[in-house]
Structures are given as structure tokens and as C-alpha cells.
Length: 111
Image (cartoon, rainbow, N blue to C red; front, side, top):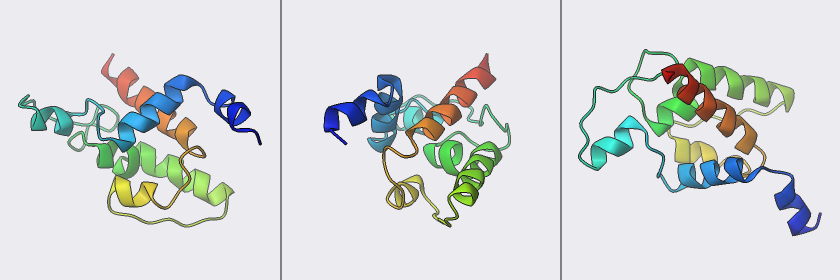
């Protein structure tokens, strides 16, 4: 597939979100804490844990169910303790839509 055509298959919002996730630049509570903003942290999706990239995109029950479903469909098994090790096991473009779904769920849970 021609590179330009591949890029046009994915909305820029998905690509930007995935890049910010990879660079650890999402405004999660743990990231804001590192910049001096001390907030009471909790996941807006499950309300059971503190909000971090690893929790939102890997360990939250909503995220875990999404990834289990994806891997069941593709008959793959991936295990990782951190988002970075998980990300290193999967393809960047293949799962940007799932990342977008999880982020939107976290944002809409706040409203």
C-alpha cells in the first residue's frame, strides 16, 4: 500500500492521540503530578484505581475487556505489565482505533 494511502485510512485525531500516548504526553493524573499538579487521582472509567497511562490503556477493566476481545478475534495472546512493553508487542497503526475508543470513554466518563 502506498504510504499516503495508508495515512489517509486513519483520522489525524487517532494518530495524534497515539503519538502523544507513545511520548507520554497525555494529560493523565500521573503525568500532571510529574508537572507539579497534585490532584486526587482516580480512573474516570472504572473509578477503582488511580488514573495513569498503564491503567487507562491496559489495566482498567474496560481496557482489559477491549484488548481481550481484539486478541480473541485475531487469536493472539499478549501479556505485559506496562503500556510501553505492551505497545512494543503490537503494531502502531493496528490498534490506534482502540486507543481512541478508550480515551474517548475516559473523557466522556468525566462529563
